[in-house]
Length: 355
Length: 258
Ligand SMILES: Nc1ncnc2c1ncn2[C@@H]1O[C@H](COP(=O)(O)OP(=O)(O)OP(=O)(O)O)[C@@H](O)[C@H]1O
Ligand SMILES: [Mg+2]
Image 1 (cartoon, rainbow over the protein chains, first blue to last red):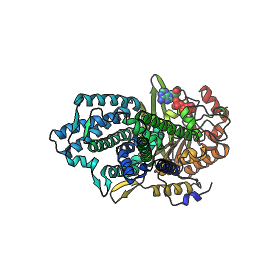
Image 2: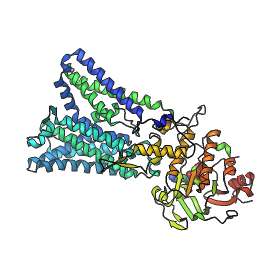
Image 3: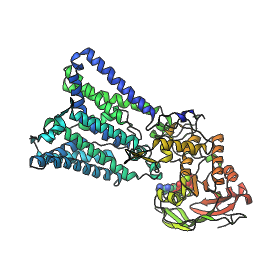
Image 4: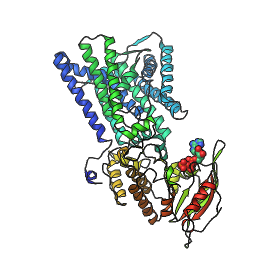
């Protein structure tokens, strides 16, 4: 055992390896960008890049929240429906004369409340997150439709549309907001007690509990956070197109979850990367943009997107299996006797040593 | 039940367990168990699979409150309803199967639940990674251990190294009693020996220890007294100097004392 590694100054927040993975993804994005520019120079304009960043902004915001959810070994399928529900309700109030600032506050309050509801069902009623949020997904879409079936809302005050359409120093406001959300999210994830607890309950819930982590409370907070980021994403979306309707955000959860998985966050929980999620969202937005510029039909775009997600999950799974004990634990296989190292997954009994 | 004295010294009682009971449905996993642990003592807890040892540990750890009975620490009765309660009462626990989070690195595991914080811009609390790291190195080197790659997820450490991390968790807080559930299980000879040394070092620092093991060789090497459980009941407590391995095996298997 050497201690030379101990003296290195870089204080590890998360594990360095995941950082390298983030860099790997960044390299893939850069390589693809260069490829696209070579194929079609129209792709490479500054205006188009700003366009991509703007397109990606609300997905980035929600992917930051989803990184916490998936790292905690959860999932949230309801984000798209939540966007619809939150925006149609808030839009109604703002059009009805509510102070726009209060209207925005209402969106965040709704987001937090929905997250609290979801989180409580998951943490205290012990309904698996997949089922809980599947139910929320249907219920919220239904409520949005009940609230304003077939209606299309237009005409927000400029104070609200600024969030989606404004430009600050040449940079679109939604891009600035998504960047700020990403920086905040990365800090929360890597540098705070809450972030550590999220990674802990996703890695080993029982061990975290025994260590004194308030697992249920942390889990509820994860979904509240997701709700807040969902509200922010919804706000950007609604402000950008200055409208909303009950069908907005359909299938959005697929984009958000895909971005997070492409970014290297483990579907098994325990480890994740906010930076990776941002890069994942950018990759998806860039691919969509390139396909549009290349004139690829929308249906084929979907096929390509799905392919990317499957490849990303496959890569992530192979990576997971490179950590043998973890993979073994995941598959709940008995440990093989041929291993040279002592098994360190589930508890081992030394049955033969008694007599 | 055979209660024997703690030896020549009239050492203080650190732990006094009275009539502890815990059932799972109809099964009495721990059935009216009473015993005591003295200062600076190593008490081994043995018994067959399913005897109730881990259940007893979980009650002491505050991880699973008992149905009945009393737990006194230094003469004061404590309700241990959460791991935090146990920690505050001065009990540190090492659970069967370690209780580490595989995906977290060494300092994160050591400090989980008791994180060191610093202030960002003087107001916002955030993790003090630097100090947690330095304290971890300090803690480990106090036991003559240095781990490479503190920043790696602990899943990549060897079994013995992981055990070391789990044990150093215990020493962080001001513990008077450490309860270890099979700390040597699944370890190689060398690594097992290192953990044994670690246990002795803790005892030499005045910490009382309850250790569960199926390895009677270890038990006789370490323990001052041996408590034997069977089917949830405490069969007896014997001084290891005054008994034999065969005797203990007989008690584990047949229950009867002699
Ligand atoms: N969570 C639980 N729910 C139901 N029954 C349980 C639970 N935990 C333990 N038991 C039962 O309680 C009894 C005592 O279990 P315990 O884990 O305390 O045994 P042990 O002495 O630690 O065994 P081992 O040496 O195998 O670790 C067993 O019959 C077990 O099946
Ligand atoms: Mg046990």
